[in-house]
Image 1: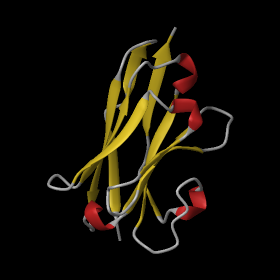
Image 2: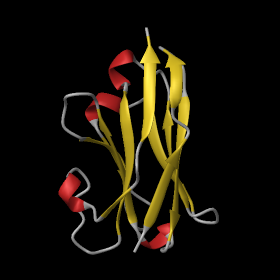
Image 3: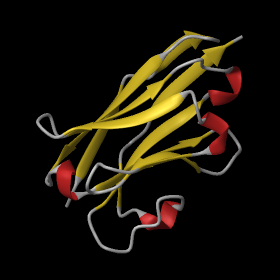
Length: 125
């Protein structure tokens, strides 16, 4: 079992920055593939960024490339989503996800076994 708790969401003006945190328990993140997804009202949940088990490779959706990054702090058992140059279209609930198994598909919601409760990010124009 892996428990995930997101934090750091809020209201920010366009062009601003936020850093989301995903604190994990039950399993060390150094052995787990992690990802961030987001879901806007009325839309499906979509892939944003991911990091593999080794922490050496990251994957980023085209829509956020150059603005968002994912990182991991093994000592704090926490994964971060740094969001810069935010746009109103980034407004969504952001979810952290984990896949401790071996069938990881970073881009797909079905590639993860555990999810956090989500944190709201609202970007005003």
